[in-house]
Length: 361
Image (tube, rainbow, N blue to C red; front, side):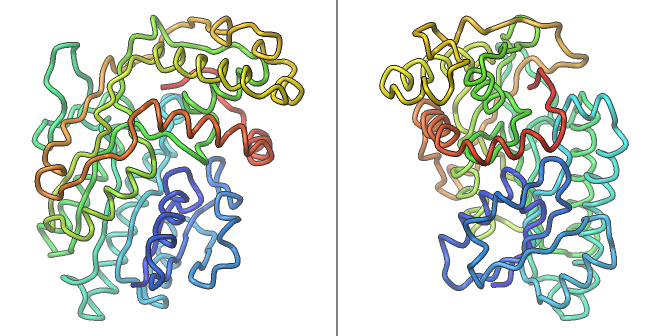
C-alpha cells in the first residue's frame, strides 16, 4: 500500500512512520512535513536509507502540492497527524492553528476527494484523521470519562481548531462518500516528543538542574498513552474500524500532573543511583550529588482556560477491535526516560530550534 503520512517528522507522526515500516515490508510511505519548529527531519534519520520511505518537505495547506503527491504516488491511505498542537501557543497566536488544523485538513480532504474520484477510489481510498480528547472539553473529578457520543465543548483555540477539523472529516464522508475514520486520543508520551511538552520538558530540566514548572496546584488530570500503543491503535482502526466512525483511544492511565512529575523525578533519581556516569554527563542535575530531582518542582500561575480533567472511555475500540494498550504508565515512562538519556544528541539539537515554553499541559 502507498501511504501518505502528514506531520511525519513530528512526534507521533514519526513514531507512526517507524512503526509502519517496521510492521510491513510491503508498504511505501510518503512522509510529508513542513518542518516547522516541532517537525524534525532527524526523527526519521534511522530510516533515511530505507527505499520504502520518500520524504517531501511541504505544507498541508499547499493545495497544488498535496494533490500532486496524492496523484503521483497513487496514495491509497492517508494518515493525518499534521497539526499545531501546543495549547499555550494557541493562546498566544491562534491564527497558525486555524490555518494548519482547519484549512490544512480541508486541503487534504479536497485533494483526496478529487484524486480518488478521478481514479475511481473515492470509496476505496482511506483517510484516517488523528484528533484529540481536548475537543470534548473538561471533566469534573467524578464525571464519567469521555466517550464517542460526548458533545464537543473545546476550551482553547487549539481544541476548537481540532474540533472543526473533526467535523470537516465527518462531512466529507457523509456528503461525498469519502472513506474516513477518526481517532480521538488522550495524551501521548514517548520518543521524539518535542521538549515543550510536560514529560520531555521535565526530564531535560532535571538533567540541566532547571526548575520544573507546574501550573496551579498541579492537580489537573490527564489520561496517558504510550505512543507506540497509539500507533497500534491507529492500525487497528484502519484495518477493522467502521467507515465514517470515530474511536476514542486511551491508556487507562489517569494521573494528576504533579504525580506525573513526581514519578519522573523518582525514575531519574533511580537512574542516577544505578549509573554513576550520569553524574558526569549531567553535573548540573541535583541527582548528580544525591539530591532528589523533586526539589526542582515549582508551582506557577495557572494558564487561562486550563481544563481540569481529561479521561477517555476506550471501551469501543476494545470491544469492537480488540485493542488494548501493551504498556502501563510506569513501564512506558521508564522506557521514555531511558530514551532521552540515550539520545542526548537528538534533544540538544532540537532544543535550539525554537523557544521552549516554561510551562505546559
